[in-house]
Amino acid sequence: MIKTYLSDMADRLDIIGDIHGCEQTLIRLLTQLGYQKHNGVYRHPERLAVFLGDIIDRGPRIREALNLVRSMVEAGCAKMILGNHEVHALCYCSAHPSAPGNYIRPHTPRNTHTIAATLEQFAAYPDEWQDHLQWLKTLPLYLDFGQYRVVHACWDDALITARSSARLSEDELTAMADPASATAQGIKRLTSGFELALPDDCRMFSAEGYRRRSFRAKFWVNNPACLGDLEFQPDALPDAVAQQPVDSDLKARLVVYDSDQPPVFVGHYWLSGKPAPVASNVACLDYSAVKFGRLVAYQTDASGVINSENFVWIYVDP
Image 1: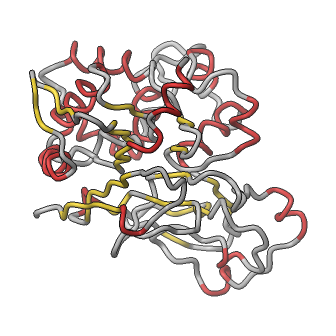
Image 2: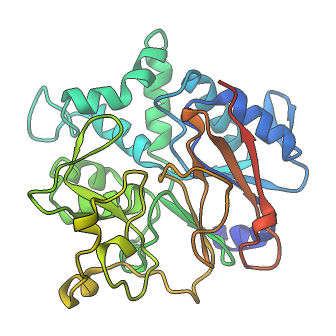
């Protein structure tokens, strides 16, 4: 029944990228898309909003953004999937299954920095935050509308086909206490993307100053010649690394979303410039809204293909 419903709505979706607490920009975008507020909820008479996750962290109005999105989902006006920041929040705030006093995601300075803005903005609303955490556990990791698909970072057919449910189960959440486990690696791939290890002697740092041990890779390249063909992140690979050839062993491990698959929409990757497809059937809708970029949506139609004119965006006002 759910699949039928999702399929029925495939040509009337407004898929929205990473919000990260930019609630007022989200309101402007929803208004531009034709949503109006009725009884406290933004609604469209004919279309369904689909949020790609990463509603929380970083931005100035995280609590307001999460309440807005949740109200739409609970009213049947929207769907939401989990992003890596929601998964991080669940792990950071959940007790470790076998280490009393610890948490599934250790409270290291880096992990704490990631969620700090969210915890600060919910500090006066602890019960509300706990209720949101329980609600996040009910959300899926991906959605398949037939003509179109959504996942936060990487659609891996093998992983998704092997799952019994799109939801993150309690057992899976507990298993994420071991980051090296197959369960944790699978959830990370869906929500944080396909990553490849950097050479040990490569000193590459993120914009926030953290040393990178891996880089985010494209999951739709069928026959890459070198690592540079796979790079998909704001931080460019050093030339020497980018020119390294992709050998047969690495090719066998790649995730490849074939061009004959339905269009898939992701967030996560901090793009810039004018929104456009990154492949014939792949579009990223994260255009760095919280860094004063654009909050981007894509409006599906009955064509079953990605049309450049269907991207809609709002510039974020500093």
